[in-house]
Image (tube, rainbow, N blue to C red; front, side, top):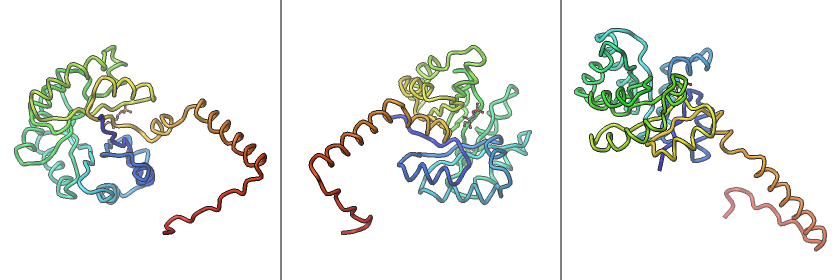
Length: 233
Ligand code: E4P
């Protein structure tokens, strides 16, 4: 089954979704942290890492150049064993070199901002633990990300390494397409996760059942069952 990662750096939202049984990992990036406002970056990463045992928490590198990126990645990886370092794909191959180096050092990576099968394939070959396809950004570029998911998934299996994360999800219908195409992981924002839980027909049905029950209770002069407090034996 497709795993769900939480595409947010909000500790409160992550705790909320974990309490609903949702969240196999976390992804973040510079824009996601910007949306958090004033926040201690390292403390927030550590707080999220500590919320579950052995769950992957992607933290994106922000520097440029091979040496700088490797140093930044090593720093984040030392913070907590759950950190997975995000490295951007780029046209000159620096990102791939960084991913290979980190792989050789045993540091897990998530190669990111990719929109084509070719990019995903190169990232997996370089030794990325996760390869990230940006679903709607691919569509914005006139590409077919559903076909990419279908085509790359068996290729990744044959390589026997990287898992596919699909991000840049804007609406519940995207998730339906991504799951049907067989992606390993969908990384989803709290906003879209909340939209996924809602349907007006479901709400209408709940109201119909509630009204029916009120009528039944009234007709049968039924005593409403006493609430059993949580935690009672
Ligand atoms: C995935 O890892 C990214 O955080 C994310 O999904 C980016 O998508 P967007 O910038 O198009 O919203």
